[in-house]
Image 1 (cartoon, rainbow, N blue to C red):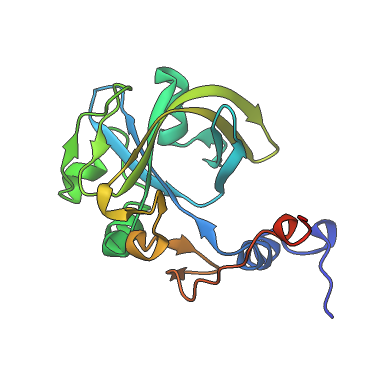
Image 2 (cartoon, rainbow, N blue to C red):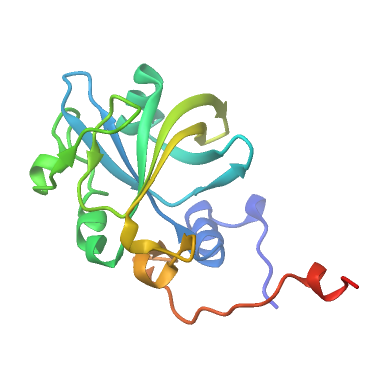
Length: 202
């Protein structure tokens, strides 16, 4: 077994191994509002749930040349965002939206992605996405090279087409996830197992 310690491994190489092992990672496809009221869109894969009641999620956003990325700047100013869960049909747009566009150059306009008003927050949502979290900023945790944004999910929007028997039909949603390098993945085999607590009930 090969071992790698962050203190003695090239940082970029360690990140490749680290992120390539921490898989699959769900993608937070985030809309925020720029200072000129155009819409910023960017994908982030260091993303996940951190609390259940109330529902809270976190997104870790790296800095660019020591400065907050546009998404982070916008969230810090407006205290909100919309996180979309992209499906397979969005994979090209997700990848293209990772480009470092100039500030106030709207990715949704460049990529011709229509938006719709959100229900609770002022930040617009992407039309055609099947799941989205409308979020309010709870806190920012300053990390050595990233900023961890923790959000309260104030509204969950799920398209009827991906709800089956009261739960999310993962095959219908077909979410895009991030893996190592320049690779993405989709849902493969889905395995159902009963909760082990049920086996011990008498």
